[in-house]
Every structure is written in structure tokens, then in C-alpha cells.
Image 1 (tube, rainbow, N blue to C red):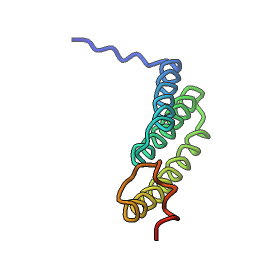
Image 2 (spheres, rainbow, N blue to C red):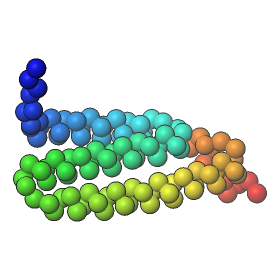
Image 3 (tube, rainbow, N blue to C red):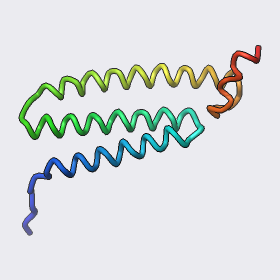
Image 4 (spheres, rainbow, N blue to C red):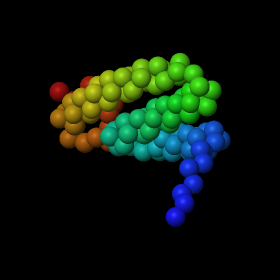
Length: 108
């Protein structure tokens, strides 16, 4: 049995990255749960990473992969800070609904 190992072209990765970014953007605009909102932001960052690595491989340059490393570091820091804010908000409000997030200063 022969398997085809034809490389995927750059258009496939562009469409996939656009699809992932669009799903993340729709999630950020429509969802009210802070954890889902954080996951959608991570999805958007990962779609940019996918596109940068695809272009870096296509053009045989390693410059974009250095940016990917920095984006992963920023995403890890963002997840850490975001989750700590979510934990503090849940302790204060007993919910993670983003519409109630402006009530944190009103309660003591």
C-alpha cells in the first residue's frame, strides 16, 4: 500500500489560519464566560503562529519562527494573568460572567 506524502501548499495553511482566527474572533465577540473568552484569545494567537510558521517554512527563513517563540511566551503570560484575574473575580462575585465584571468595585 502506497501512501502519498505530497506537501501541503501555503493556501491550505492560510485558509486554516483564517478559519481558526475567525472562530476565535466570533467567540470573543459573542461569549460571556471569561474562561471561554480567554480560550478564544489563545485560539487567535495560535492561528497567527500557524500562519507565521507556514510562511517561514515556505520561504525557508527562520525569522518568523523567532516571533512565534515570543508569541508563545506572551500567550503563556497572558494565560497566567488572565486565569488569576478570573480566580479573583470568581472569589468576589461567585460567577465568571463577563457582564457582571463591572460590579467588582461596587461590592466590598
